[in-house]
Length: 144
Image 1: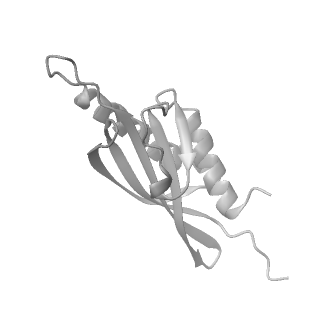
Image 2 (image 1 turned 135 degrees about the vertical axis):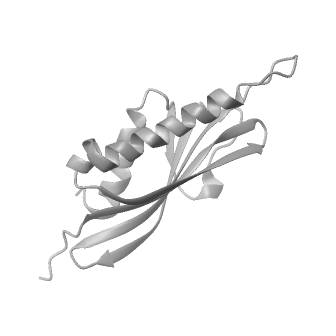
């Protein structure tokens, strides 16, 4: 059965996996993001946090984190601008797929999408974008 939560998760993961700019797609709570140096970056992480029932539709709140390691050379030069631009483009492509592309054809409709830049120093220096997305899908549940 690929409806509701499973539909949203499967289609978002499939779309991100098909993006050549993403090496790994994970799912879970935000504290489950693998930030270690052994992870294969660039990474996209999906968090489906809530669902709101609306007559014949269901509105899902989804957060997606797209990130990569910022490399710093011995002379202090880094690739942060490239990392930020690449991760931004991953989310822009996802937005367009929801707005009028493959995800639209699969009945996933975007209600809104806000993106926020971030950079964090964990075991490594990560940078990227997080997106808060509201995705509307048909309610397939019957009353019988």
